[in-house]
Image 1 (cartoon, rainbow, N blue to C red):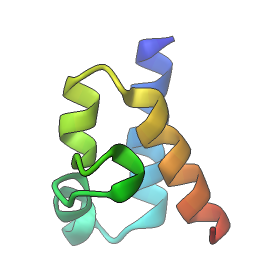
Image 2 (tube, rainbow, N blue to C red):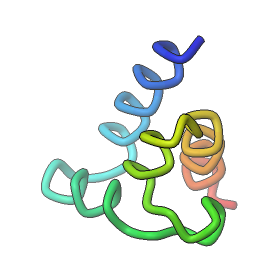
Image 3 (cartoon, rainbow, N blue to C red):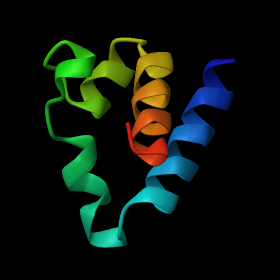
Length: 61
């Protein structure tokens, strides 16, 4: 399942942000990730939380 989350995160980032903002989004701390930035949360094994954050952003919540 880990690989599925990673692939889905990559797809959602690509769909949600212009190319020049991908790295910026992945390196910006988010309160929904307990202050971690998405790349760090993924390193800690928290791909599901990053995926859920992206879904909420895509839905406008």
